[in-house]
Length: 199
Image (cartoon, rainbow, N blue to C red):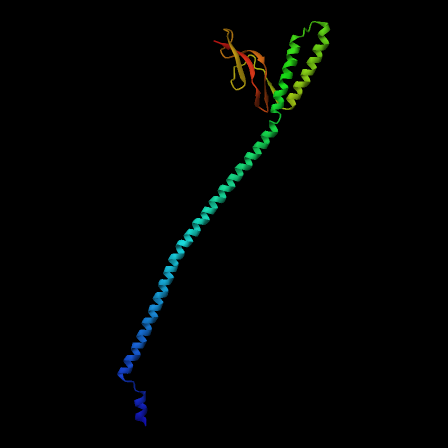
């Protein structure tokens, strides 16, 4: 009976080779699966890397666009503020240009009145007071007179009507003012009409 038991427990060399073969094939199969998994991971990481690079590029592009939009909005805001400020500063531009002939006419009227004549003295004083109050109103609204007699000619503020030779004055000096000029907050409303000396 012990012989039978020993025979049952003994493994023949053929059986032993088969077991080893199965173990080797299982090992090869396991190695192949691990290799396949590793290859899949490598491929997926290679695929993910370009995707992450694309995402980084998109984020950088979005940041750039946001910065550009913010800069543009700031420029628009500044432009709007400047336009509003100019609208306030120069709102009286056309109104001033329309009032200036009235000032010119008052000055002409005063120039024609003989101050020595007692009969015209009251009229002269009335015109002077009217002109004075008018010029004060203009100054209050930042409308300033350009009266350049004796000053060098400035093409930005003066308009030369004629040039007259004059050896007593330096060339390009304003000899006479036909019509005064005016500025509103530093901006020219009307240039002064002048006669300029010539060498």
